[in-house]
Image (cartoon, rainbow, N blue to C red; front, side, top):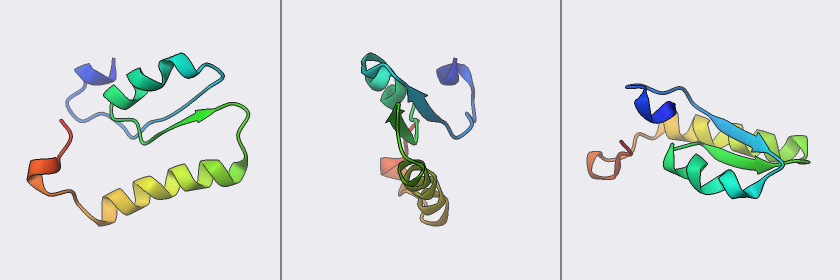
Length: 64
């Protein structure tokens, strides 16, 4: 579904199943957290997005 959205929302996937990790990467997820994860690990995932917002990617490296 995310591939169909022109400006998809920021997504952090969380699941107990590692077989969906590749699909998450293909949809440009910020991170993929396998349950059970610690709060600190979630905070790292959130910080990835904060950094991405502050430092825009060069056009040639933009993910579409």
